[in-house]
Structure formats: structure tokens, C-alpha cells
Length: 290
Length: 324
Image 1 (cartoon, rainbow over the protein chains, first blue to last red):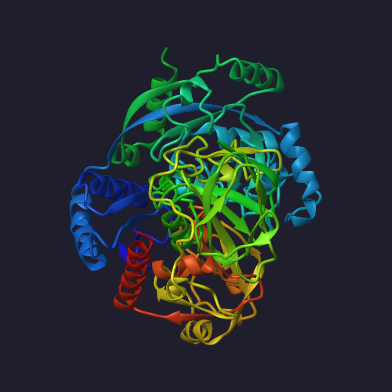
Image 2: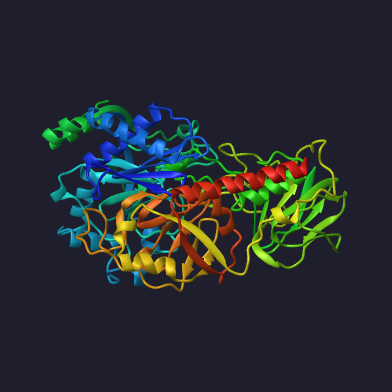
């Protein structure tokens, strides 16, 4: 049973579960879809998050209690809905251990749990990996769900689609940094993220992607329709790349030649729970078949 | 028909009533922190209430007009001067081509709204001219106003007439201390009864970290949390939750020490618990609080929040009547 609560007189906040899980995320996503489909007069923002969601409304148009009742009814429908999602799988190239995040992490070492190592060395060690390379293989090995887009402009939070026992967990920095390079691939708690813009941040820094994910000028061809690339429900596969390929993609980005590799996919949570590795293998097949 | 920016103050941004609809992607609504003052200023110069104007925080800009215009300054008591001569706030003022608008020092409040007949006419982004510097949206090339910028403004309507003013009783001026009404909720249950009581009993001071994203408060007692085993993925600090959405006006208290009220340029979500939300009727007031203002949070229920909202709407209706 979800927990419904008011955020002042203009928001209703619904916590599906205190803990993160793919089930909680799917319930949150299907409930927000149901709210959107219901096109309730007065609802102005529908925001899904990892294991919760939030609705913003105009109380001059709909009474907060009336909307609360409506949402509780929609919850019953959402619980009956099949956990299926028409989505896309996207390959995101990542240059792990790049010089830019390295320079930044060295500058903020006194704010880190392990001032003598790098963020990746720390994450590898506390997750029981013998080498940074083995840890990178684990991070880039299985796909990830975009479970929330937000914090700032188009920043995706991603949750790894593996058994909980295999999930990577890394605490955030002891004190947040005041700087993070744009397009840093970060990690905090059990979430990966991509910093869409340069700025403050508390997540561990693993690498950087050359792929633009937020373009307010909308000059990047694949962001012409909308400036934000990611949507909740997207599935991401990281691919580890080296400096030469990073430079090549940056060059392609600059002349508008880069197109992310992505394919449509129908994801079923039941299929996934029944056969996790099999489902992931089918997703990779869909992504790389041609 | 541009305005030449001679100096820009501390933080002067172009703002209208914002760009709702993109919060689920981390792009906040933005817009004037004190929407009431922006609306009043626009009404005085004959604009649509939602036309873009300038929001000047703490220190006014210096602006040279290259065309005649009618302007009004509402919100903070930041007295305007035309060619050095002091003018009233909350009043429509005629500015002639070649004249310079500057400002005296701030007397009260924190943010003044400068409306220009015809409205500031910079390009809009996602349906709004509001400046959101983090996302490089709106404003002048996605940033705050700088010296050397030229700001175009639109054609003024027929109703613009110098001399109109907002009656004193309808001007909202912050006092030397503030009360913010709060509806408890969200993760209210995470703190102990003693902490819940203490939060409302204590007097908090506005901290220096007070901007469009949010206002931090300090000086109250540390909040105690109800003990629990932290849920999976929530993080180890008792003030952490599984990353969730943040309502506008929500009050998060990282580590239980200093409350932060999120404002128009809010981060859309994150991993800190929130104990409640400032009611919509008091959001404008936050934008007028200076650092070190003693502030009390006052507990209200939904009915009182809606009544306060209705009261604000009726004040605005009276300004509409007074300015037509």
C-alpha cells in the first residue's frame, strides 16, 4: 500500500515504498501513467521518481482532498496493470578513469572517505572487487533502468538490473563537491547518474561520457525535438571506451554526426523476474542485432 | 526599443511567471520569487500580469532607456531614481528616451521587480523568458543580466499611464521578522515528537545561502530522528531517503541541522527527508527575506492553507481593480 501525503496545498506526494526496487519503480511509473491518462483538470505536473511520485496541482481548480481521493482510486487500477513497458535501450559510451574527473576528484580529496585513492579504487574495494577493471566490468556489464530524471536539467538516475546481491553500493562523498565536469558518470547509494550540466555534486565520479544528454540550444540533431534526452523507463547499457574513441565521438558530436545506438524494446517485469540473465541477454540482442 | 544595461547589481535576472510542465525532467518552474510583486508592477504599466520584467536582488541595476517607456518598481523597498531624482515605488513612472534609471539602497525586503511597458522581449525558452542559469534557459543567453546587454521591450498597450499607484494597504512589505505557515507532511513522521514541537517553537534565522533555488535557515535546535533501520538505497544518514521528488516550498533538513526551503529554481528531487511544505500563499514572502531575518514556522492545516491562498487572490483582485 502506498503512502499518500500532501506537500503543502499544491502537491500530493506518494511513497510507493521506502526502499528502492524495480517493483516499486514500476508501480510509481504505472501510477503516473494512469494519472496522465486520466487528464484530471487542475493537475499541472506529474513527476515519477525511484520508488515514489509527485503530482502538482492548482487548488483553485481541484480541491486537494478531491484529488487525493481520485489518486487513491487510480492506485487500484495501477496495481492491476501488467508491469510492461514500451521503452528503448540505449548504448552510452563511457570513458572510465578519464583525466577530467580525475583532476576534479583530486581537487576534492579532503571531502572523500578515502583521500589516498580514487573514487573508482574506493568503490571497487568496498564492493569486493580485486581490481578497478573488474569493477568497471561489473558496472558496464548489465543494463540499467532510468528510474528518475531530475535534480537538475535532465539528469538521469539509473538503477542496475541485477539481483540485489550483485548490486553496487557506494556512499556519496562525505561533503559535496562544488564542481563536477559535465557528463560525468557518477554513483551514489545504489544509483548511477550522468551529470547533465557542470556543477555541485556528491556522487562518486567513475568516468565521463562524450554523449550530450542536455542541449538547451537544441543544436544536437537527436535533441532537436526536445532538449532533454532521457525519460524515466529508458534502459541504458554502458560501453567502456578508450581515449581515442572518446575523442572521435566528441568530434562527431561537434559536427552533428553522432547518433546514439538505440532500439525499441518491450520490457516485462514478470519475464525479468522469472529469468533475469535471459531477459538481459535478449535486451543486448535487440540492441546489437544489426 | 532596447534598454542598455549600464550596471547589473548583484543578481538581476529576467523573470516572468515561469515555465511549469517540465519539473519531471528536472527543469523547475522558475519565474519571479515574489510573483505578487511582479504581477502588481505589470498591472501598473498596462502589461499582461505574466509579462517578463527584471528581478533585482538586494541591489538595483542601472539602465539607460533608448526609447520612452513607462516603468514600475514593486516588491522590495528599493527606491528608483530617474536621472538621479528619487521616485516612488509601487507607482507607474514615465521614463523618456535617454534617461537613466538607477536605484537607491535597499530599505526593506530583498527583491524588487521592475516592469517595463510592453514587457522585456528576449527570446522565450520552453514557453517562458525566465532565467534559469543552471540549465542555461531564458534570460539573456541563459544567464543573468550583465553590463553591456541590451534588453528589447515590446509595444506598450494603451492603458499605460504614469501616476497610477497601488494603494498602501495592498502593498506587501516584509517586516523585521517573518512567519511562514507550514503544512506538516511528506516525511514528518521521521522526526520525534519533541523535534516536531521544537521546529515550530524555535526562532530560525535566514542564512546567507538564500537564493532562487532555496532559502537556508539556522539557529534552531538539531532535529532528532525516530530510530529505524535505513531502507535499501536510502543512504546511511537518518535524514536520507530513497531519492524522491521535492515539492516547491518543501522543507528538507540535511543531517537534521539546517532547514532549507526550496523555491522557484528548486532542484526537482534528491535524497533528503522533508518535514512539510510552506503554504503557497507564503512563497512570495520568502523571496523578500534578507539574511539574518528572524523567522518562525507556524503550523497550519489544509483549510488554513486554502484560506490564506484565497486571501492572496482577493488582494490581487483589488490591485486589478485599483489599476484599471
